[in-house]
Image (tube, rainbow, N blue to C red):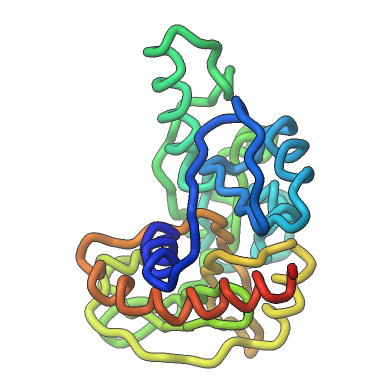
Length: 255
């Protein structure tokens, strides 16, 4: 998604440079720490800290154990269904990709000892979850609380950059909701408690996935490098101009 925003900023006359790795020192008014991994390596954080202003410098750890508002443990009293997920963002797929990329280049893997990737699994209750799952640091167990609809399930996605944002409720026939699988969508307001959480988690730019459960917002996922589903690319590209306004607001704040 960031590439659409950068294209719009170039159209407005900004100079943009994308740098891979830490090989060179670059002079810039504003930087974006955009590492597609759950935990940003310490050397990237140190490098990004040298810039006068760097977006998402505080969002270096988006592991489920840190951000999820639906975590349960084996002693929890929750009586409903639960879902077992990877503690890593997006099931650890970005880390696995970076490991393969480094291996092909003959370099050390940046994320050694990666656990085997497992699909998400929904269970009827905590009692149905194998006890060994709770002892694993690479997995987490959450309440399974999608918003139910007569024709499916719903979740909410809040995309933001600076003070510009869009928040959309998607309905899908599938239990595990993705924007690309939805049958309808509608704009919804952003709960104040999520704004507070965004500030605490250090996000200038990104996407929060959440549901409303028993009258309160429950954060399920926080992504600092959100993508754009192929089925919705036109819609996401159309929103880039608004997000670019938010980016320019951050630039003015940095100045």
